[in-house]
Each structure stands twice: as structure tokens, then as C-alpha cells.
Length: 138
Image (cartoon, rainbow, N blue to C red; front, side, top):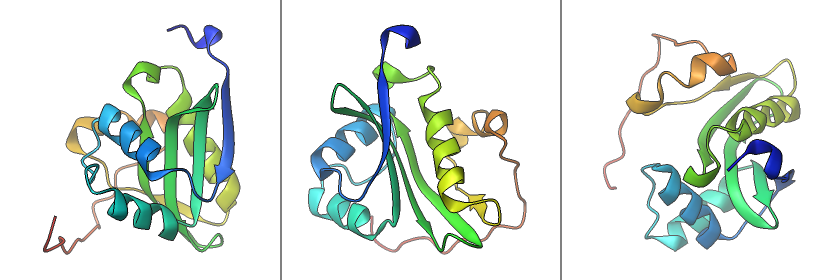
């Protein structure tokens, strides 16, 4: 699919459907609870910055963040449907996320090891000072 042949609409949304978000996560290979739609619904409900990419109304990309809009933003999910990858959609979702949070807020994410090479070309730098307490249930 050529990027020129695809007209993508980006917008800030509050409640995309859990089924369509799960389908994008599944296609993009994100390890999320895609078979637990009530949990996906809660993830959507509690994310306070969601930017979507749609092609003819179909959800093809999503950026889901938690932010205070003035100091920090955690980009929890960045996913682009496999059929639409490598056309700049993820880059644009990050750009729009940064625009929404403003220049005084930092943008932080945790990346799967397989995606480590992707983020530097979007302006991210690796940070060695992160810490995590893993969830006790999947």
C-alpha cells in the first residue's frame, strides 16, 4: 500500500471502540490483553490522551497516553496496523501527542526490545534510570 494512495485522518478521541483498538494491537503485535475487551475498555477509559489514525473510518493507528499536560506524559501504547506500517503513521501519532502535551512536558515510553531501533528516529533517546515493578497478574 502506497502512502500516497492512503488518506489518513488523525484526531483526538476519547472513546474509540475496544474491539477496534484490540484489532490494531493484535495486528501490530503489541502484547496487550486483546482477548479481554473489558480490560481494553478500561485502558481506553483511563487514558486521558488518545490520538487515532483512521483510513475511511477504519482505525489503523492509535497513540494512548497518560499525562498531566504540563510536566510528563507516559505514552503507554503506540500501535499501527501491520497493513499500514512504514508510512509515517506512527511518527505522526507521536508528533500529534507531543503537540497536545506541549513543549514543557516530557514524553516517556517503554518499548518492546524488538522496537528499540524504531524510537531513536522519532527523536527519543534511551534512558538508563528507569525502574519497574511488574504486574502480578497478566
